[in-house]
Figure 1 (cartoon, rainbow, N blue to C red):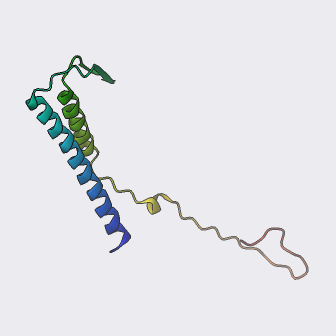
Figure 2: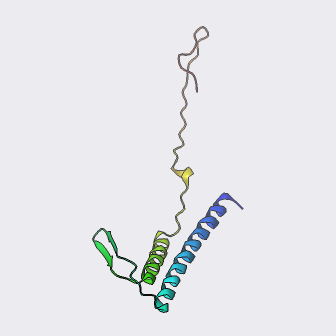
Figure 3: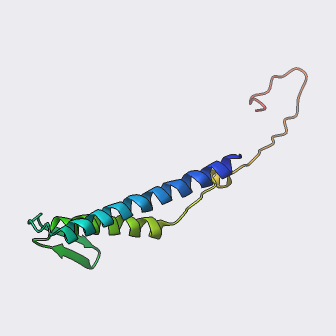
Length: 111
């Protein structure tokens, strides 16, 4: 198995694991919500650019479900990104021609 195949397998398994963890959190939130656990868990305020999310006096299941939805959304939004680092490196060669004289040493090394 080549290195490219190993990278693809690793990225795919990482994304699947992230989707699984997000799904588990969302399911746990759903189960807490359906079980009737209604204690006040706290307040959450989040802002991203012009969007604002405010959750006040929410049940604990709400936070689990919200966190699971965020993990799933970020995982799907990012997708699989493969970068080839070798293509971004410039490969230039410089050849310098030095005329040799038999009695003088070169002022500059040829390499």
